[in-house]
Length: 475
Image (cartoon, rainbow, N blue to C red; front, side, top):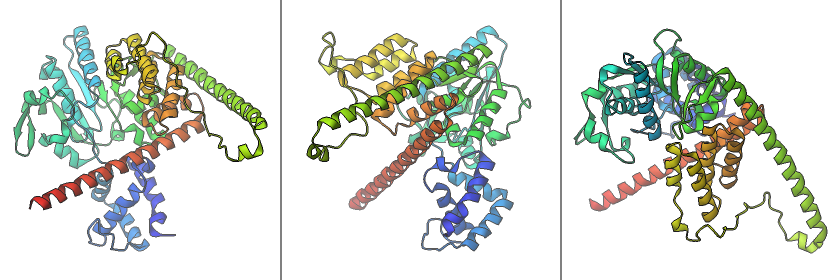
């Protein structure tokens, strides 16, 4: 047994216990690489990336002793594993919903001071976006507070400084940058008016104590639950619920909506905002029943399809000669059926609105129009993974769990590695009692995320090499 595969289990257990993070969700060998880098630095005095320096089991044991007795070293290792990836107004629909809900809350109670929470807040783009959204909607800085927590001291320091580079400003429009930032050669400095509305604290999500502070009207906890194992996910959602005010809203990431359905949470029915509120007992019972029916229907259709395929294959084989069968490969699954274009649909694909139009209708709550455009897109252009995924999200927003499951499966038929469809369908299966099926889908989702991360790293490395090549040529 090598040093590498000998030490991994105890470090995995430590990471899960300290942070709730499942090491497998970080990508293949991410924890192993981080630990070996820290061993080289902390125990051998070498460069973190100097792979020529050999590490033996005694070195790893020495590092383990240091890790378990030094809070500073624990923080360094955690920060080596937690890579922030965020930008201003990420998933803009969530902030549109925030502005509307905040104003509705103040109309009901004009004396109320809104409270918002962002965790993990990373380098500050999310909580600052919350503040800018409220300010730009005419809500004064004395009418709200924003708390921002993150486990990493490094990113908290970055957030407090309020200085951001180009990578924090993605997409359009960027008018908010002109209103709230001052440009200088290192990037953009956020204005004091926005910065003073956000209070940053270094803390783990699991450090939150119920009933210690006033509840929050809005909680942003996006794209972190997917890194936890199931027990940590459940514990985290219970903590978030305990800190949510009556009538409050929790915003999660697009791949985490299904996780909320395991608990007393109901979709706020705001398309593409991925917002949830506390369920009533009647809503909880209705959701459980709908999911069970959906899962039963999916299982029944799968059995029927398998039986039909087997019978058809037997009949076809009986008609074929041995020589013909020897050179004919039976497909593992049938190709997707492309429906013939009906006469009333124009044959010119350019005349058909894009999926962006369908998304805009969905954002406005115009579900019928959104569904019609998405279906029309699929008829003209053929089966489309983005169309099916959008239809699944719309069905989720309407509470049509069985339809949502069907659309997610269609999306996975076209793209078996589609991360959001995998996680959404996994959650539906899990709620319906098919825990093995849900676990299988989540493992596929984790492998998909790991491949995407490796691809991103490779692209970044290639871009860096390209910049170096061009710089050398210029010199």
